[in-house]
Length: 102
Length: 159
Image (cartoon, rainbow over all chains, first blue to last red; front, top):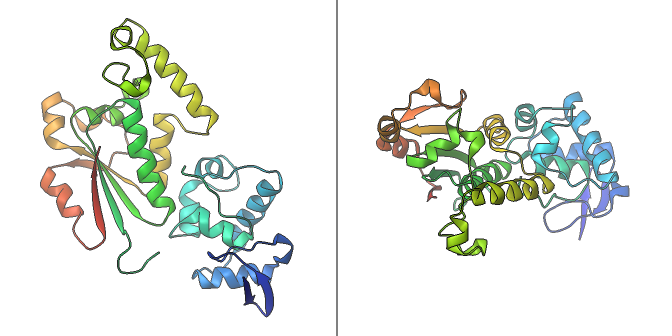
């Protein structure tokens, strides 16, 4: 379905994840983060670009991988993206919600 | 997700230390945190082995009395069978990015999961807090655990 966010019309699925990554912009990310009550800092951006990079490489994301990323540890990941860090950070990064249980 | 009827907190009681049960409890606790749900683990009776600092790396899968292993009970009881089955299971788990028990405990703690040792079981096995995984939050009575589970949207699970 279509959604207007940051003055831009984007395609999202029923959970609000972008379905076309080419529609992602920094402004879209900021707007999605705002809906989740998050103000994006440099640390958030570092995680977002790591996630996008991993997605591009076809890596299945998990909390364990985040912890080993060298970009961020698990504790800080939970602090930056409370209430479900992996699902919220991927939503902001404009990539699919990981189907991971760990 | 955070509506009135949603799950707010999972209180998981682990009473066994066979590898498959320990992983079930850990995956459920970690999975709760990943969804923004609070989680606490209460280790009682043999479940304590999963947080015993010298034993937690030596847990086994059960090969006897476990029909789903598809090993005849008599064979399952042969010396070394548990070790073989455990080794196979651990290698499969590594393939799906499942951490070992110690690393999983580290992940749980970093994710904000509380780890509690059951006082009665600690007394029964003559374990001291110093014997346990250093990041265990404390030793609790059953009453203390129930107190922590007060409130709406809290669910308890016995494994």
